Image (cartoon, rainbow, N blue to C red):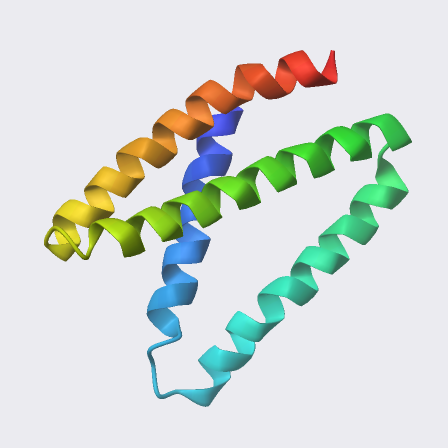
Length: 112
């Protein structure tokens, strides 16, 4: 259940960041630029409070999530040349969800 909540929160943050990047308000660009800095700050906090093994597992999950995000973005780009944007996004999203659901057990197997 916690994995699904993280998925929803992460997706919402990315959606808001991409939506806000189209704005003419300059402070929003600063917020979007701040996201990688917050990621680095979060990693520093993780290093302080996690064991080396737990931190390694978290980073594996982060890499897996980043690959999923690249897959999603590339699929939207690819599908949008053949279908309407809405269909392209929904198709890419369904493949992304399948990737994330199948990848979780694969990551657990690799970590074991």
